[in-house]
Length: 361
Image (cartoon, rainbow, N blue to C red):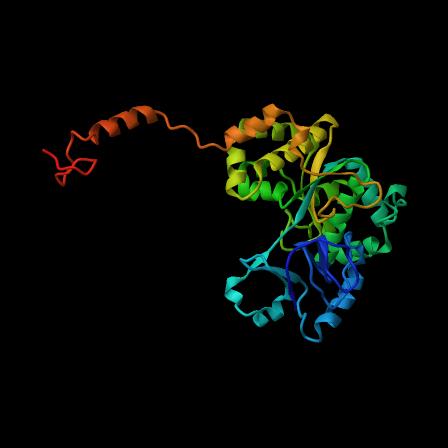
């Protein structure tokens, strides 16, 4: 286990460098963000995560027998911004574990949802039809195998099926990515009311022709601790309702985004773009986690749109800025005048002194 500080240089086997690095083992992955320098004893790979089986083989060797005993690699962040890669089983080797906190840096993407693409995806999984030619870079026999394992409730297999749909959708329409924000997070941390418009992925998979037994094993939302997976979706018929909610609750949403630690401008701009695209094309929206890379890397012809408030006019940016200001209190000026009148120098306080510290009469 090694700690390292922050810069930027090319990635090489045996070293960690570059703006973002993805580490993964058998079940989930976590990135090390903005790594400057430092050497590890095992090779690392750039996103995308299809080489996950190779990483799984190398990581236990690198840490030694017994050092990596669980399915997840954690990135721990020290208050001084140093980074260390560790497994939970090795956390006790840190000098002061109580001062460290687990860091989660999920990349969540929104994919315009076309039911016809979902039907073609499920047909390819079941062998009823060949996969779309545009899926060639990411489609493999592992997806068909995952479908078989998903019937028994195997979580990695289920997550693989839901993730594959995101790639299928992304092969035909642009994907809108944001760090740590999607439909699940919107409902959980910003606006509970949005949950009325979200639907579990099991419903869309069942409608697309997947057997009910497999579909029922799917989670209803993203699990932010599980890594690669698909999550909830908004049907096309409800996208207009989402736009109405966003407009009616714009100021409140901006303030809650800021309170939750998100950049309101980039988040609102990307969300607005994604919803507008879906409505204009008569599509829904489907969320996925780590379906695209942290810098917009993606499979084949997938087009990834990242947050950029510059695509919006000055009026939108000003509206977001104004919404972040605390609301004015009704009657504040009147209360201020009354308060000043009662604390003027001519009015002694209860202890016999004026507000300016002089003795009262």
